[in-house]
Length: 258
Image (cartoon, rainbow, N blue to C red; front, side, top):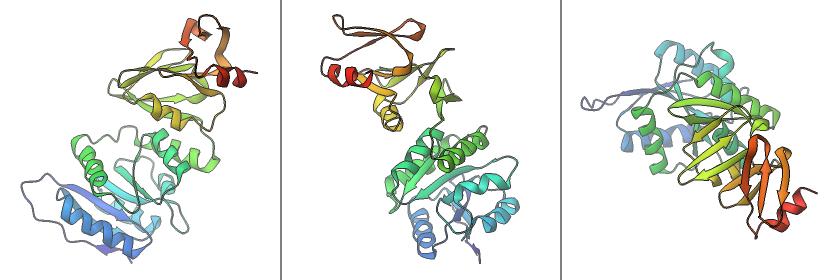
Protein backbone atom coordinates (compact mmCIF):
# COMPACT_ATOMS: atom_id res chain seq x y z
CA UNK A 1 0.00 0.00 0.00
CA UNK A 2 1.46 3.34 -1.02
CA UNK A 3 1.72 5.91 1.72
CA UNK A 4 0.71 9.54 1.36
CA UNK A 5 3.11 12.00 2.96
CA UNK A 6 2.11 15.34 4.42
CA UNK A 7 3.80 18.19 2.50
CA UNK A 8 5.98 20.60 4.42
CA UNK A 9 4.60 24.13 4.82
CA UNK A 10 7.67 26.25 4.14
CA UNK A 11 6.58 29.03 1.82
CA UNK A 12 10.02 30.57 1.48
CA UNK A 13 11.50 27.48 -0.18
CA UNK A 14 10.78 26.58 -3.78
CA UNK A 15 9.36 23.11 -3.57
CA UNK A 16 10.49 19.99 -5.39
CA UNK A 17 7.55 17.60 -5.62
CA UNK A 18 8.94 14.13 -4.98
CA UNK A 19 7.97 10.45 -4.74
CA UNK A 20 9.97 7.82 -2.87
CA UNK A 21 10.06 4.19 -4.07
CA UNK A 22 11.60 1.42 -1.94
CA UNK A 23 10.30 -2.06 -1.11
CA UNK A 24 11.58 -1.83 2.50
CA UNK A 25 9.37 0.16 4.87
CA UNK A 26 12.29 0.97 7.18
CA UNK A 27 14.31 2.37 4.26
CA UNK A 28 11.34 4.54 3.21
CA UNK A 29 11.01 5.87 6.75
CA UNK A 30 14.72 6.62 7.08
CA UNK A 31 14.89 8.60 3.85
CA UNK A 32 11.62 10.39 4.62
CA UNK A 33 13.00 11.53 7.98
CA UNK A 34 16.29 12.65 6.40
CA UNK A 35 14.38 14.72 3.84
CA UNK A 36 12.25 16.32 6.54
CA UNK A 37 15.33 17.28 8.55
CA UNK A 38 17.85 18.21 5.89
CA UNK A 39 16.03 18.95 2.63
CA UNK A 40 13.08 21.25 3.38
CA UNK A 41 12.75 22.11 -0.31
CA UNK A 42 11.48 18.57 -0.98
CA UNK A 43 7.72 18.06 -0.80
CA UNK A 44 7.33 14.29 -0.53
CA UNK A 45 3.83 13.50 -1.83
CA UNK A 46 3.93 9.69 -1.80
CA UNK A 47 5.95 6.70 -0.64
CA UNK A 48 5.64 3.54 -2.75
CA UNK A 49 6.84 -0.03 -2.28
CA UNK A 50 7.26 -1.12 -5.91
CA UNK A 51 7.59 0.18 -9.46
CA UNK A 52 4.02 -0.49 -10.62
CA UNK A 53 2.64 1.38 -7.62
CA UNK A 54 5.04 4.23 -8.30
CA UNK A 55 3.91 4.49 -11.92
CA UNK A 56 0.33 5.22 -10.82
CA UNK A 57 1.45 7.95 -8.44
CA UNK A 58 3.83 9.45 -10.98
CA UNK A 59 1.02 9.68 -13.52
CA UNK A 60 -1.29 11.26 -10.93
CA UNK A 61 1.15 13.61 -9.20
CA UNK A 62 3.55 14.57 -12.03
CA UNK A 63 6.53 14.87 -9.65
CA UNK A 64 9.76 16.75 -10.28
CA UNK A 65 11.85 14.06 -8.63
CA UNK A 66 11.66 10.33 -7.88
CA UNK A 67 13.89 8.63 -5.32
CA UNK A 68 14.08 5.10 -6.70
CA UNK A 69 15.56 1.98 -5.12
CA UNK A 70 17.25 -0.09 -7.81
CA UNK A 71 16.72 -3.56 -6.33
CA UNK A 72 13.06 -4.46 -5.80
CA UNK A 73 10.87 -7.53 -6.41
CA UNK A 74 9.13 -7.98 -9.79
CA UNK A 75 10.63 -4.88 -11.41
CA UNK A 76 14.07 -3.37 -10.84
CA UNK A 77 14.07 0.38 -10.37
CA UNK A 78 15.66 1.09 -13.74
CA UNK A 79 12.80 -0.76 -15.47
CA UNK A 80 10.55 2.21 -14.76
CA UNK A 81 11.67 3.49 -18.17
CA UNK A 82 9.49 0.79 -19.76
CA UNK A 83 6.30 2.35 -18.36
CA UNK A 84 6.67 5.82 -19.85
CA UNK A 85 7.11 7.11 -23.38
CA UNK A 86 9.17 9.94 -21.93
CA UNK A 87 10.81 10.38 -18.55
CA UNK A 88 10.00 14.00 -17.64
CA UNK A 89 11.13 13.86 -14.01
CA UNK A 90 14.52 13.69 -12.34
CA UNK A 91 15.62 10.40 -10.78
CA UNK A 92 17.97 9.79 -7.88
CA UNK A 93 18.65 6.08 -7.48
CA UNK A 94 19.20 4.43 -4.12
CA UNK A 95 21.36 1.34 -3.90
CA UNK A 96 23.38 -0.82 -1.58
CA UNK A 97 27.08 -0.83 -2.45
CA UNK A 98 27.67 -2.53 -5.79
CA UNK A 99 30.67 -1.42 -7.79
CA UNK A 100 29.27 -2.43 -11.17
CA UNK A 101 25.94 -0.66 -10.59
CA UNK A 102 27.79 2.46 -9.46
CA UNK A 103 29.88 2.40 -12.65
CA UNK A 104 26.65 2.12 -14.66
CA UNK A 105 25.23 5.20 -12.90
CA UNK A 106 28.41 7.13 -13.63
CA UNK A 107 28.35 6.13 -17.29
CA UNK A 108 24.76 7.28 -17.69
CA UNK A 109 25.33 10.49 -15.68
CA UNK A 110 22.50 9.60 -13.31
CA UNK A 111 22.70 10.55 -9.65
CA UNK A 112 22.63 7.91 -6.93
CA UNK A 113 22.74 7.48 -3.16
CA UNK A 114 24.44 4.60 -1.38
CA UNK A 115 22.83 2.92 1.60
CA UNK A 116 23.29 3.89 4.40
CA UNK A 117 22.59 7.34 3.02
CA UNK A 118 25.20 10.02 3.58
CA UNK A 119 23.51 13.30 4.57
CA UNK A 120 25.90 15.57 2.66
CA UNK A 121 25.53 13.52 -0.52
CA UNK A 122 21.74 13.61 -0.15
CA UNK A 123 21.77 17.39 0.24
CA UNK A 124 24.10 17.78 -2.76
CA UNK A 125 21.96 15.53 -4.95
CA UNK A 126 18.78 17.40 -4.07
CA UNK A 127 20.62 20.69 -4.53
CA UNK A 128 21.59 19.75 -8.08
CA UNK A 129 17.96 18.98 -8.90
CA UNK A 130 16.87 22.27 -7.36
CA UNK A 131 19.50 24.29 -9.25
CA UNK A 132 19.26 22.59 -12.62
CA UNK A 133 16.31 20.40 -13.50
CA UNK A 134 17.54 18.67 -16.64
CA UNK A 135 15.08 16.10 -17.97
CA UNK A 136 15.68 16.76 -21.65
CA UNK A 137 17.80 13.62 -22.12
CA UNK A 138 16.49 11.65 -19.14
CA UNK A 139 14.91 8.91 -21.27
CA UNK A 140 18.17 8.39 -23.15
CA UNK A 141 20.14 8.23 -19.92
CA UNK A 142 17.69 5.76 -18.39
CA UNK A 143 17.81 3.54 -21.47
CA UNK A 144 21.60 3.62 -21.36
CA UNK A 145 21.57 2.68 -17.67
CA UNK A 146 19.10 -0.15 -18.29
CA UNK A 147 21.10 -1.54 -21.21
CA UNK A 148 24.36 -1.37 -19.27
CA UNK A 149 22.94 -3.14 -16.22
CA UNK A 150 21.05 -5.79 -18.20
CA UNK A 151 23.82 -6.65 -20.65
CA UNK A 152 26.61 -6.32 -18.08
CA UNK A 153 28.56 -4.55 -20.82
CA UNK A 154 29.81 -1.00 -21.09
CA UNK A 155 28.93 0.38 -24.53
CA UNK A 156 28.39 4.13 -24.10
CA UNK A 157 29.03 6.89 -21.65
CA UNK A 158 27.27 10.21 -21.10
CA UNK A 159 29.17 13.45 -20.59
CA UNK A 160 28.18 17.10 -20.32
CA UNK A 161 30.02 19.13 -22.96
CA UNK A 162 29.41 22.90 -23.02
CA UNK A 163 26.14 22.45 -21.16
CA UNK A 164 24.86 19.76 -23.54
CA UNK A 165 24.72 16.06 -22.79
CA UNK A 166 26.49 13.81 -25.26
CA UNK A 167 26.36 10.03 -25.58
CA UNK A 168 29.74 8.69 -26.72
CA UNK A 169 30.23 5.09 -27.90
CA UNK A 170 33.08 3.73 -25.80
CA UNK A 171 34.57 1.86 -28.75
CA UNK A 172 35.05 5.20 -30.57
CA UNK A 173 37.24 6.74 -27.86
CA UNK A 174 40.83 7.06 -29.09
CA UNK A 175 42.27 8.66 -25.97
CA UNK A 176 41.36 10.82 -23.00
CA UNK A 177 43.72 13.61 -22.02
CA UNK A 178 43.65 15.36 -18.65
CA UNK A 179 43.58 19.16 -18.81
CA UNK A 180 43.63 20.51 -15.25
CA UNK A 181 40.18 19.71 -13.77
CA UNK A 182 38.76 18.79 -17.19
CA UNK A 183 39.36 16.02 -19.71
CA UNK A 184 39.47 16.05 -23.48
CA UNK A 185 37.87 12.92 -24.97
CA UNK A 186 39.18 12.28 -28.47
CA UNK A 187 37.03 10.37 -30.97
CA UNK A 188 37.48 10.02 -34.75
CA UNK A 189 34.86 12.70 -35.37
CA UNK A 190 35.47 15.32 -32.69
CA UNK A 191 36.85 16.27 -29.30
CA UNK A 192 34.60 16.46 -26.26
CA UNK A 193 35.42 18.44 -23.13
CA UNK A 194 34.14 16.83 -19.93
CA UNK A 195 34.20 18.37 -16.46
CA UNK A 196 35.55 15.19 -14.85
CA UNK A 197 39.11 14.24 -13.94
CA UNK A 198 41.03 11.41 -15.59
CA UNK A 199 40.67 9.14 -12.58
CA UNK A 200 36.89 9.22 -13.07
CA UNK A 201 37.17 7.80 -16.58
CA UNK A 202 39.92 5.37 -15.61
CA UNK A 203 37.59 3.90 -12.98
CA UNK A 204 34.67 3.63 -15.41
CA UNK A 205 36.77 1.95 -18.10
CA UNK A 206 38.96 -0.24 -15.89
CA UNK A 207 37.10 -3.44 -16.87
CA UNK A 208 37.94 -2.90 -20.56
CA UNK A 209 41.49 -4.18 -21.25
CA UNK A 210 41.98 -2.01 -24.35
CA UNK A 211 42.08 1.11 -22.16
CA UNK A 212 45.32 1.73 -20.31
CA UNK A 213 46.68 4.65 -18.30
CA UNK A 214 50.06 5.44 -19.85
CA UNK A 215 50.79 8.77 -18.20
CA UNK A 216 49.37 10.98 -15.45
CA UNK A 217 47.65 12.93 -18.23
CA UNK A 218 46.75 10.17 -20.70
CA UNK A 219 44.36 7.23 -20.91
CA UNK A 220 44.50 5.55 -24.32
CA UNK A 221 42.64 2.92 -26.34
CA UNK A 222 45.30 0.48 -27.53
CA UNK A 223 43.16 -0.44 -30.57
CA UNK A 224 44.00 2.97 -32.07
CA UNK A 225 47.81 2.78 -31.70
CA UNK A 226 49.71 3.46 -34.93
CA UNK A 227 53.28 3.51 -33.60
CA UNK A 228 55.35 3.84 -30.47
CA UNK A 229 58.66 5.63 -29.90
CA UNK A 230 60.77 4.08 -27.14
CA UNK A 231 63.33 6.87 -27.29
CA UNK A 232 60.82 9.74 -27.11
CA UNK A 233 58.38 8.00 -24.76
CA UNK A 234 55.47 8.84 -27.03
CA UNK A 235 52.59 6.94 -28.63
CA UNK A 236 51.11 7.90 -31.99
CA UNK A 237 47.39 7.24 -32.21
CA UNK A 238 44.75 7.64 -34.91
CA UNK A 239 43.90 11.22 -35.93
CA UNK A 240 47.51 12.27 -35.35
CA UNK A 241 47.09 12.24 -31.57
CA UNK A 242 50.39 11.88 -29.72
CA UNK A 243 50.13 10.61 -26.14
CA UNK A 244 52.93 10.82 -23.62
CA UNK A 245 54.27 7.63 -22.02
CA UNK A 246 55.57 7.71 -18.46
CA UNK A 247 58.77 5.77 -17.85
CA UNK A 248 57.00 4.22 -14.86
CA UNK A 249 54.23 2.92 -17.16
CA UNK A 250 56.57 1.68 -19.91
CA UNK A 251 56.74 -1.98 -18.83
CA UNK A 252 52.98 -2.20 -18.25
CA UNK A 253 52.31 -0.56 -21.61
CA UNK A 254 54.64 -2.87 -23.53
CA UNK A 255 53.04 -5.89 -21.90
CA UNK A 256 49.59 -4.61 -22.85
CA UNK A 257 50.40 -4.22 -26.55
CA UNK A 258 52.05 -7.62 -27.01
